[in-house]
Image: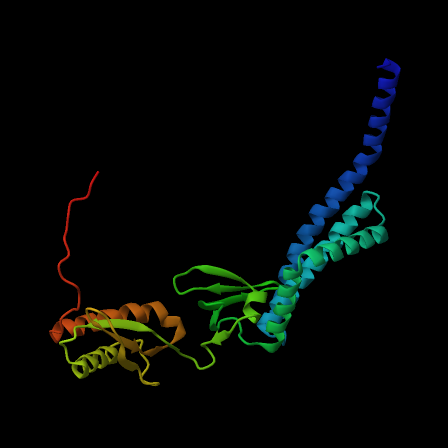
Length: 274
């Protein structure tokens, strides 16, 4: 290639870099400083909304929406320093948004479902619910998802579209939930005696509520034993503590009253291979 032409291209590249570098630096400065300001403003706005008359769910929703809008404004401002026409950029974004929206209708459905949950309030933050066959405590209601915390400290992110498309069970509206425990008893044992022993064990638990009364009944007849359903009521926040304590109390009561365990016989034990 001609050295003069190469030099010409280098000069043009240098001139372009010299003229573009200040714009790029300004855009980066606007982006970095703007995002920092948005982060601080989001905290202030969230605190202000939480102290207002808005419900906690709506306050969180509005806070997240305002944060998204402010970040979008910062990005547009940074783009304008690079020489982009904001109006043309908005038109392009609108067109892209429409195309993406058609492709991602599920996200729009989750957004609409989020609005439905916020305004119809089938549950609130802090409620114990069963959503899409998942049981837990509502930690957050976001634009697209509902965050649950299960009794065994797992965090579940459930799309709002799945929530509104299924049955919603809210245990906190009545202030209690019912444990669903199972106990096996031999066929030869007296059920009235076993029921009385279980009732005594439930009475000794600090977590079982005296009202409503617990349900105790025969659930099914297995090949080797009878399955007894034990359904005491507890406060939702005591789920695991109550489960462990009630099981322990029933085991202790069975031992003291000499109620035999039901299990199959003839199990062979052998060595474990390498």
